[in-house]
Length: 111
View 1 (cartoon, rainbow, N blue to C red):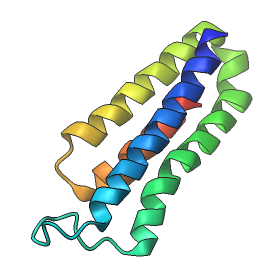
View 2: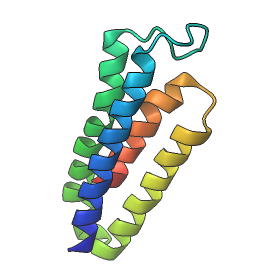
View 3: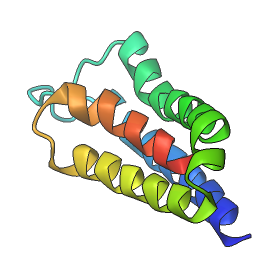
View 4: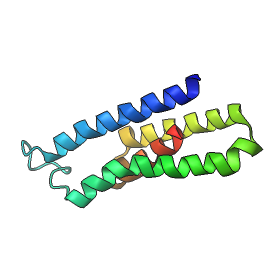
């Protein structure tokens, strides 16, 4: 019961955090920053990367991990992937890893 509830909580929390980031991206207070001027397509990619990662991660769990490694190891693998995705979001210096790879890894970890 706890693992699916935690996954749902993390998914909702990350969606809320993404909406805050999008509000920062749309503000024009600092036009000289690197995140200013995201196109609508890039903003949509930022939001959908988490859902795409969750979709692919749930497919991986359903087809490969659930039967081969068991439930407990699968939860450990998912937690490790979530941590790696969070670290990419926080510590990355490139825009690609922060806005595309990090949320994708978070989505796989949430699944």
